[in-house]
Length: 390
Ligand SMILES: Nc1ncnc2c1ncn2[C@@H]1O[C@H](COP(=O)(O)OP(=O)(O)OP(=O)(O)O)[C@@H](O)[C@H]1O
Image (tube, rainbow, N blue to C red; front, side, top):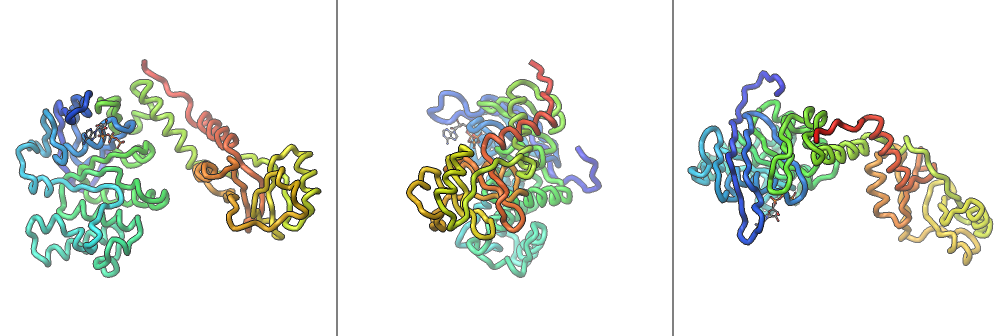
């Protein structure tokens, strides 16, 4: 755990032989989970879909009642506490913020203080303080409705609501899953800076291993039945995966990370026959056949790509036409990440994307194979196969 001058306000969480068996389920969703979560740390729950992450998380605040076992928060058993008391001690933040649409930002954040019977003034002060903390100007946002906020702003209000009654423990379930990658990165950074100040105990479910590495003081990797594959600090998991399952899990994450670190400009671009609008189709067809291209890229007078045409369609044309509105041309800036490139290619019927440079000028094309090869190369360069303990 990093040295901190700030006092820890979080408390320990202890799970002892916790089991959850849903009615009618053959295998228990959580077979027998024992876990110590130290005060003031962020612990990230990761693992394949259906392995029991959310079930384990929700048993901590008893949104799901365990079948058996003991859960202690700050030394006290949650099974013996009243729901209101638990809600005061445990903040809960889920994907998209899950704000009530008919309530203003203030009313949403004030829900738990309301439950606790805070007076108006104290609540209003707290709401403003929290809005400042999550980077929203109170005067501008406190009276807005959720529909008047962006996805990222809604998520910020969701975090503010989770913090409202200053709980020592905060549970988060895929908190940043519903926002675009840039907002997501910003929200992650904000959470880290809030945590630096508050030092709560935060338990967070994510499907994103990179997010777990970025946010977690510790990462819990679960397999089916919420069995612990490894529970350690990120550095230790990356350096010494406990078994092949973890190594595969980490490996896939590492490869994905390379996607967001590498740029399209690092890839050698493919050539494609190009034809300017108005050019003779027969000339372009000849060039395409000579190059063995089954499609050509149509450029406008400023050499900006505007359309794809299949070579076979050129047979019926006299001149290269201006594109119709429904062209499925996919273009990407050379500074875009390989992650962006793959996303785009998935929606392209050509399995490739046209790369543009300064002022959107045509540079070439990238296809799936080129991106995958680059990912593999980068991965091999930076991640020699980790030693696997059988
Ligand atoms: N209410 C329920 N009734 C019956 N079975 C359930 C219920 N909720 C979850 N399950 C089952 O329990 C297992 C664990 O589910 P859980 O939602 O905890 O997994 P998870 O790891 O959070 O999954 P994901 O990453 O897909 O959200 C799954 O097999 C799921 O189908």
